Image 1 (cartoon, rainbow, N blue to C red):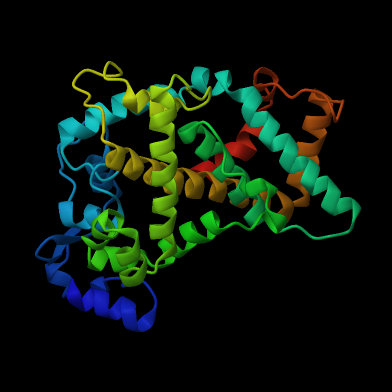
Image 2: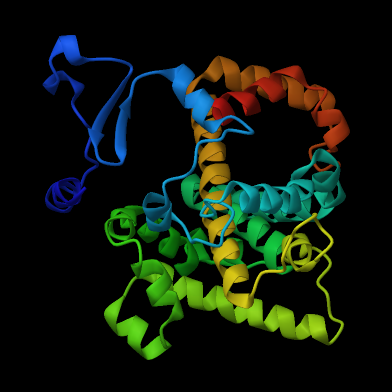
Length: 322
């Protein structure tokens, strides 16, 4: 483990185990390369580990280094993770997404308006930053009931996005020293900012302020209309055996969802846009289907109609499966 961390530190890249170092007569689909580490060359075995209902435990030290212990990703106990999953799953059903579709569409329309403005002025747009921004605003509103306003920032650049990028680049630090994340978030600000000058830690402090404000407003009867995630977590009856998380645990879950939700969704959008624009025949066929289904460019686009567009569904499914 320490050799691997040293390799990453010196070379600024990920350590990849070379199975060619092992004699051929000792090879198999699963090879132990460390006390708590396996080299796996078997898709079937991966599926067995990650399937729903799997009895394989998460490795606590590893997950403490890449997530927070009280978050849905960081929970290593099967029973606790199952309960948290039951709490959050209803928020991501098709019916639930449909219930907030108009709010999501408003954010997309604002993004399109900014893209139109740049096009009319002949100014190139960084779609990578644009997709990261709009995704951050959508996820943050689903959590806190109000967006961060990243899409409204000049050139779609915002400190919160920079913090997430920095966290991904420096993820190896927290993997090598898994207690640092928890320690930095629970120290007084003046100590943590000096010892851990990492943007994601400052971002965690910003989220904690929002959590505390949300809880205070909630006590006063002010519940945000789109804050489904926090409300679900704060509801003791949302799942059998669910214990309402503390403010600190809520913050860990919020940070996890903001990071994972933003990165995965925006990366799929970026990849999809790139693939479509890289293949003119795909682009033209998609535009043709869109124009035939929605002839009015400024008209309302509904989920009911969009899901009946086979080519659009294929173009969306491809980057999601990549």
